[in-house]
Image (cartoon, rainbow, N blue to C red; front, top):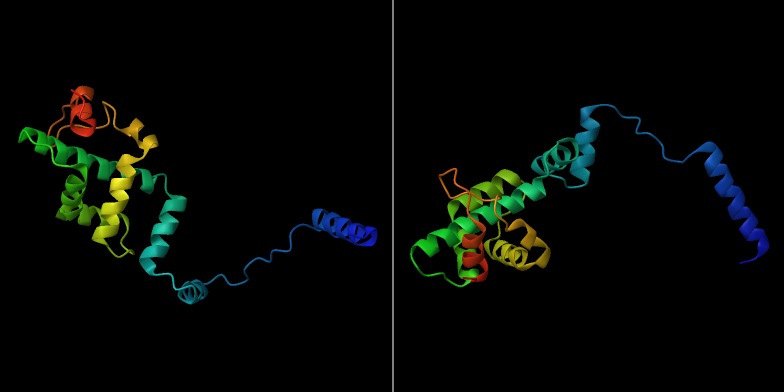
Length: 164
């Protein structure tokens, strides 16, 4: 790059630091403009609300949704264990995603998204198998369904990893 171009770039960067960024504030302060822009971006009202709630709220929706799915999976495995036969994990995942409570929670967390059964089966199965998620399968995170009794670690190990 020629020296003249470098000096020109340096001057323009200096000017930016002195003057500030060239971002112009939005002059419109009415709701109609916001609705117009959201429609132009093809953002649904549910999607807009979810995004704003995530950004302004104190809750972490992704973490909560993950833990709800893990809890439903653990409860299904506990029920299978009571029957003295643990199905393959993928079958348990399919049963969990097929349950009406799963769909209700999905609609509650993501009212603007379309529920896709096969996609949710794949996502939950992959999530359970991920190594970093093993930290969430520890004693203290889960209680037996309908009780206040914590599921002990040895029971979790048996129903999740087949350890005796």
